[in-house]
Amino acid sequence: MQYLDWLENWYSSHCNGEWEECYGIKIQTLDNPGWFVEIELSETPLATKSFTPINIENSEEDWVTCKVENERFYGFGDPNKLSYIISIFKEWNEAIENQL
Image (cartoon, rainbow, N blue to C red):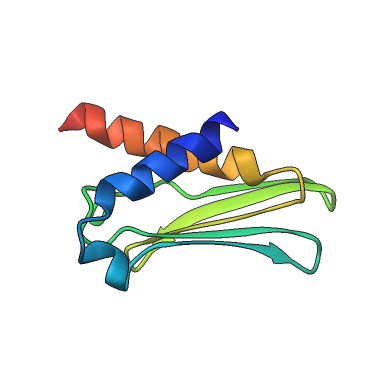
């Protein structure tokens, strides 16, 4: 739950009466099965930062892909990877914060 709590705080910290009207976070299930996470980065410090894509395919039951395109973080993973996807986003965010 620590990663979900962190993501809630990240989202809350960007809500300013305007940002949340246009941007946000989507967490959905996939039919293969798995998770899909989309986090809008527009008007955040991450919007223009580079992200090294991650693509791990150990098996059909053990996989994760994360990338940033068009000011959006995308994470896809097997049914056990939701926390891991959020942890990848968290670590990237913290690395950028430490550079500022």
